[in-house]
Image (cartoon, rainbow, N blue to C red; front, side, top):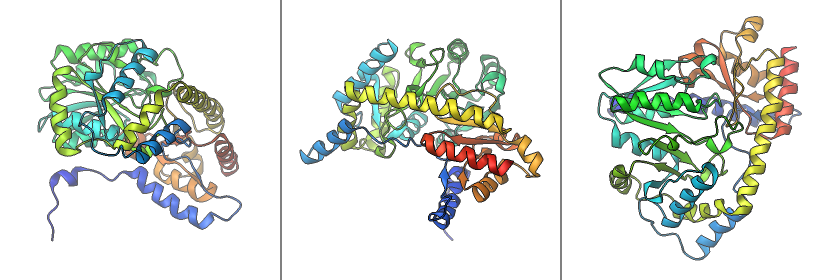
Amino acid sequence: MMKISTRAQRIEPFYVMEVAKAASALAREVAHTERPMIFLNIGEPDFTAPPLVQEAAARAIRNGSTQYTQATGLEPLRERISDWYQQRFGISVPARRIIVTAGASAALQLACLALIEAGDEILMPDPSYPCNRHFVSAAEGRAVLIPTSAQERFQLSADKVQAAWGDKTRGVLLASPSNPTGTSIHPGELRRIHAVVSARGGITLIDEIYLGLSFDDTFGHTALALDDNVISINSFSKYFSMTGWRLGWLVVPEPLVPVIERLAQNLFICASTVSQHAALACFEAASIKEYERRRAEFKARRDFFIPALNAMGLNVPVVPDGAFYAWADCSQICSRLKISGSWDFAFEVMRQAHVAVTPGRDFGSAGETHNFVRFSTASSMAHLQGAVARLQAMLA
């Protein structure tokens, strides 16, 4: 029998995708009925890349601009990203510190491989996105999940980081806005967390892939404003609507650039050349105008969907200030319907209402033990309205 590495065995199944497979199977059965499946389980915008981006991709293929780029990415694209930080956030991020990657996943992998030694511990909030802790594990580190509360916006605090810091702690991996909660870290608290980490010679890694989809001026700030030692991961998938194009970027301190470049050369060679040429068009005025229109649409969906969930007893304890998720407590409903927890609740909703949602199991102990489920509001308003009607009927 083939021996599987202990590294691979440490990686748990991605339950979001396991539920998605079950939902897809049921969707095929009910596709031609009066109630086809409504998918509120996957964090993928229903918008695709806007026209200028699609045209730029076609032009790159037509012109033969498809060969390898340097491992750090096309220089014009790095410059465009740098300009975006200046225009949107008012901060200077030199292009030489920006590395274009094969999605945010590659950015996280490169950062973890560059900075984490075997046995190092990385502090993360519970709940948090499961793949982030698995990147730590794949680099032979250990993710330490620290329970958070609604009062803390489901984010770490400086006090909790300080209390949890031990001999093996290497740093923190945060996300703002967060998946699954859609909540951000208050800028003041983020500054205090970074101060605690920096004083101990640690690293502050922050996943900012939903930063473009921030709805509240209090929170819509990049952590890169703190200092040049913050490491930020970002992506063209969410705000820029390019999920399948597999393109992201990493902002690192300047001394780390050649280290990341060396790893990228060996592991990925480069990000997709066609995707990079297409992404140049993301920053055209017409594209930004369209992205801002979509951001307003995501906010409108949130403003409709969260009150509707609360009215049904699916309490969302913190209104998300960004992204497109609702982290809802289903314990009241589970108790009333005699359902054992969020996992079974998700399958009951799938079977009875033909609505696919994500149980909290993936996101840490809090999701399962406290009976939370994640709804994605990345689907159209019509789908959200239909899902609310079905859920109301099921729970009546």
